[in-house]
Image (cartoon, rainbow, N blue to C red):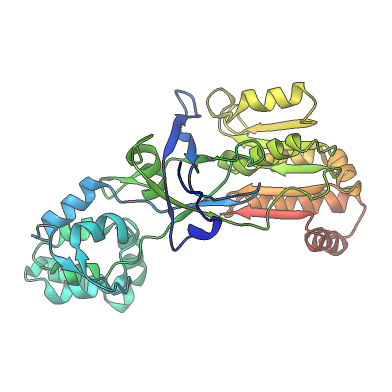
Amino acid sequence: MSTPVDASAFSKDNPFPALLTENRTLTQLGSAKETRHFVVSLAGSGLHYKAGDSLGVFPSNRAEEVAEIIHRLGATGEELVSPQALKLPAPLPLREVLTHKVALAGPPRRIIETLAAKATASEEKEKLTALLAPEAKEALVAFLDDREFVDLLAEFPSAKLTPQEFVDHQRRLMPRLYSIASSSRVYPHEIHLTVAVVRYQTNGRERAGVCSTFLADRALVGSTPAPVFVSNSHFGPPEDGAKDCIMIGPGTGIAPFRAFLQDRVATGAAGRNWLFFGDQKRATDFLYEEEWQNYLAKGQLARLDTAFSRDQATKIYVQDRMRENAAELWQWLQGGASFFVCGDAKRMAKDVDLALHEIIAAQGNLTPVAAADYVKQLKKDKRYQRDVY
């Protein structure tokens, strides 16, 4: 028999080497996206979580990218290095550092300065010097945005950097946080994740989101450990199960609301649940559709409003569905419902917030200032919560 692990044994500073037990695609053939469902085993970890928490995952970089960098540095990968950003107690082999410790994207301006100082080919030196000119600030930002470290080594081969010089320009490889898509009341020994796998092209190269592709491609089910930790959150369903819940979760923003619903059903919460979900196409992007339909059929989900933006000529989003149901949404709020938003911070969360203010003003016959005060009170009472990224 194994000895139980103390709950505090694993943390961000000492992540648990978890195994994936499931990796399946949620989106259907023909989708413009690749969204996957992962199950992470907590067996032997002593880790606990609650609905609304996130799972931190420490990824590793792609082996082919690491190999190309080592090759372009003219190195073997065995050279001992100690990157400035890591403050290591002792040097580590270059290959280990590039694989597990540093970020291979986001090269800083100062590496251009270093390359300019070391370049021996006149054409390379001219290009680098031009990028550093005061009037070239915007051009430099655009140049670096399109490139990762490997591109710079490929484009400026005459600027020979030593392995140590190279890693001194790199940032620490940080963990990624994913909203947990399961309830510990239903799944105490595992955590579910809903992850959009990032793959794209810049500067003629295939790029990959480091953590999403680590989970999708490199953390093999049942064999490759994924270092993880639980990140506790103030985001979570109402403590009073009698209270109603309005949940806005387009795309992978649906993840915590799957946890909320599992949690509320498991505790027999009497409050109603209203879910807004949006994505591109119903046929290919309706994440967890069968589960939501089952909850509807059993009356555990009172309402499900969907917005599939590409299924008609005019794009429809979750905030449009909110406006269509303004009167009922206002009734729910007036009855004490909590309002939750998860997903894209740049546009969706702002658009939803604007729609909420407009609905409250119109339905409550309030001035914009009074509506803003109403929203402030919702936040103060923890009835308006956001988990946006």
